[in-house]
Image (cartoon, rainbow, N blue to C red; front, top):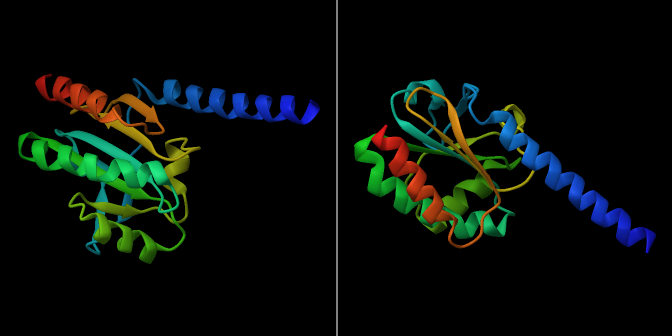
Length: 165
């Protein structure tokens, strides 16, 4: 019984910390960062000012990430031409695994590598995946923790709303 209560308490603590992290970022300027991309160049978040930006933190070992990525790629392909950017931030220690997964899934959005976890710390990422939506002014508007089928409908509504602003 003690072990069960401890595990329940631990789960609640992680959930509470994750929930607080999202409310702590929402409404604040998105922390700027620059990371090496899969194309070999460094990309900086602030270079996308004026666009609605989705930053998606993911890892190769994360099943929901694998499930979500093709759906995110559809959103990217659909809205890129009207001012929507998507930056996939991989947190694996080894970028070759990430490159292999990106190739397997056929995603076209830029993938950045945060092997030192510096950017994930800036965004208070504690679980995978985490999806952050940033408005054209650079303000964090929405933070989503985890992924379940159907979340992409929320993303779609929020992206459309931000694009109309």
